[in-house]
Length: 154
Image (cartoon, rainbow, N blue to C red; front, top):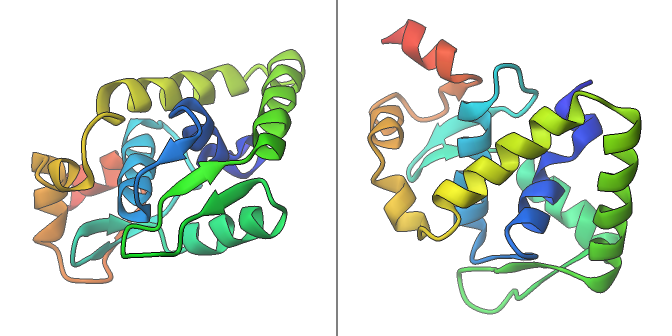
């Protein structure tokens, strides 16, 4: 199964207690998920603040439109929160995927590991991680698909 079938963006938010402080942090948590995955459809490119998922904004907007998420558009942080509808959806989705899709366990475990290890960090702390700093040395717009790709390019 692909990551699209597992909705790692929603799963990350759900496992992070239903709220992520700022979309920058959301990008960095998703990047951590990408780095932990052996195979993933999640793609990032190098931007000024490090790895950035160009599709995350569209994905978040789609979930906002479906009222599964809400966001405070005030200020620069644009926090993202799971709505009650989103929480109910993810609860049912997770139960169903665990029952029907054996590969979902690995995705859920990776997401939980990322949230456990990095969820309490600020985006600025995450940007200071060595691997993010190495990525920031690459030319802007450089695709980053998996950790093994990054290592091969070094």
